[in-house]
Amino acid sequence: MRPWMLMTPLLLAGCAGAYQPEPLTQKQAAKLEKALAGLTPGDKVSCINRSASSSLTVISGNVLLYRSSGRLIYRNDLIGSCSGLNRGDTLITQSSGLQLCRGDMARSADLTVGIPTGACALGDFTPYRKPR
Picture: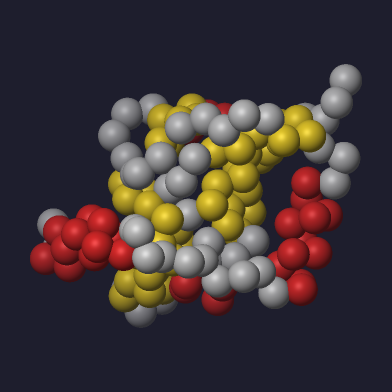
């Protein structure tokens, strides 16, 4: 394990109380609105099955969408910022087991040069469902 990975939880914990996510740009907000159009939000859950997260859409360095099916999308507002995601970097999650859960550590990385570009943790998952 790399030394910076050991520091990531401490850095996020120190910033957790004061952290304010960057507001979405107009383009990001339009992308989010289009992705969730016609869907109804439900109560937040702290974990989802990895199999329920078949497709990841990056809205910003702070907002992710996990598409489970054509009828269900989970929105995740990250804790911290994986800002490299805005440039198309890869999201690497560190979780144990078959679920993604609130608090699981994640980072963004530029795989072409092999450097980390951001550190974050998963937040709660808000399900958005298509009405029947």
